[in-house]
Image (cartoon, rainbow, N blue to C red; front, side, top):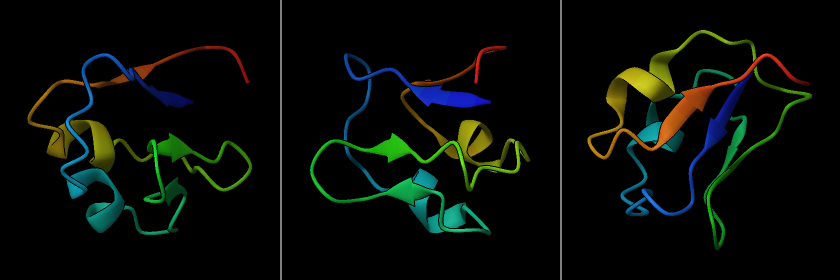
Length: 58
């Protein structure tokens, strides 16, 4: 499971653009919808701000 670290997120939208299952909500503060996330890691790889972290909860 991945989370977006709000303090680091620049709202660039790259994570939402690369997500193959549209699990990232680009409205307002970016959030990863846990029920849709397939933990592929593409969002984390694409983030220039290193604002996406993996967590073992969820």
